[in-house]
Image (cartoon, rainbow, N blue to C red; front, side):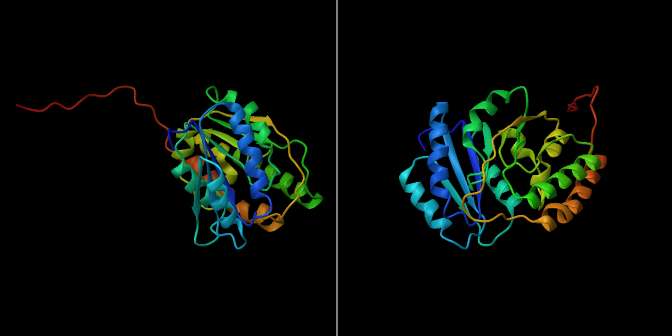
Length: 245
């Protein structure tokens, strides 16, 4: 790369061979319109289809594409973590590669960075099955009730971070559902913005009622514990040590 990018786009990929090419073409068109330097980091989470080969070919077609490939399927939080650590940009953007997140929402989210440290997409008109909509609504309600949050849609992958905050996060499996809470714990400010949500054209959902509600409940308990035990102190004064002669 000829210059350090201003924007880093982190994209987890798991068995998205059909959508990865049209997704990339659309995303690059949006990024080019922003007129800032960028990189796209695909993190392949142990795909068993042709996704890795498609990503490799896209890297040959377009500049600014980087890729990370896991040996095994490790989950979305691991993919985000690896992408955050590899990202070079001042601003880190996350979104899914299944074409349900709309890259055209990115330009409208970027101006909020500066006043806020994390801007979260809110899919206020969901294009999902009835079961997915209901399970997501239940999961969001339970998370907000127990964690003291008021986030409408923590499950939306379309997010824009100040890079320093994304890199500060100490993540564990399942923690991607709690990015707003984790950023607030680091002293950051969070805003939600309404975004488009498109119907799924390719592939199948990686989530179901079990991993959306029941498994995430255990993660929620861990985050609640972290919030209660998080170290918060301000140093009013201090003194520097002096060396005796």
